[in-house]
Image (cartoon, rainbow, N blue to C red):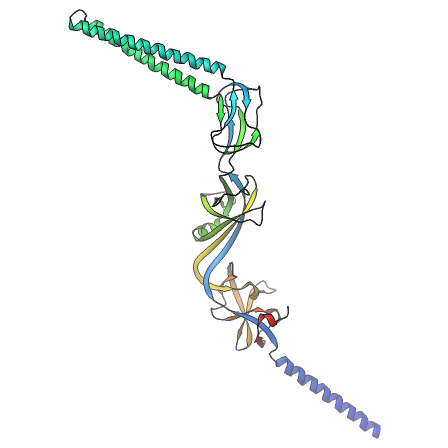
Length: 363
């Protein structure tokens, strides 16, 4: 009898302990011990970003060639030489060209003497005509001789100018400042008219060429800033500006956008790659959702939790473009609501929460 009472007593104590644990767990589950950090949603102008990769191309790149045929006698530059506009690059044998120029100048001098003599003869004839010693036919003949002499003088001057120009062709000058990237001739080589001798590339006037997708074409007017980031120096960002937009799309439905830097930089080397960072500021005012508040569901949709009267409520959101401060919310949230930005991974619909400082939350 005593043993049976002992067993009953133990059972009653066990049941009491179980009931106490269940009540304790229920009370614990009902206590608002899920701590979260929230942020008040604000309406603001949307700012979006776009990054495009491209190639730095020189504004001036020329395959320099000679305009006459002759022997190369002097080379003043080589591959890698940096030159200024007007610097002498190459000289050709000009002995024959000089002689032709001197001969042309001699023809000019002879024609000038002929004109002077024809003018004298005409003047003398006019004087004799007044004395009735020369007929009108003779005067007309002398006037014709003067006209022919003047025409011959103009022809001689034109020939002399041609000879002078051909003589100048025996020296090649840099048309713009840059660096010689290639040399295609050497001393003693015979060159014909049009033969390529140097490749000259401008270093100062460069442009970053990128392909702008057609869906971004309308955003050009909303550009707030442009920065050029050369891949040779990824930490360097150079302020840029739009130089040219070619309004003709290609097969990929993109448009050539040419960017110029607002400051000179030795890091912008022709032929290298770089990135263009665009920041667009849109006139539309919208709610911007912080990135930390966004949750992606298994079905691919996006949700966020807001807190109202200490209760977490799940909201399905429709996102627009991403900006610097978060995502544009097209549907699902309103300005002024408190959105959970930390602790949201622990929440479910209807969870009781306590809003606390971020510093008091453990990662």
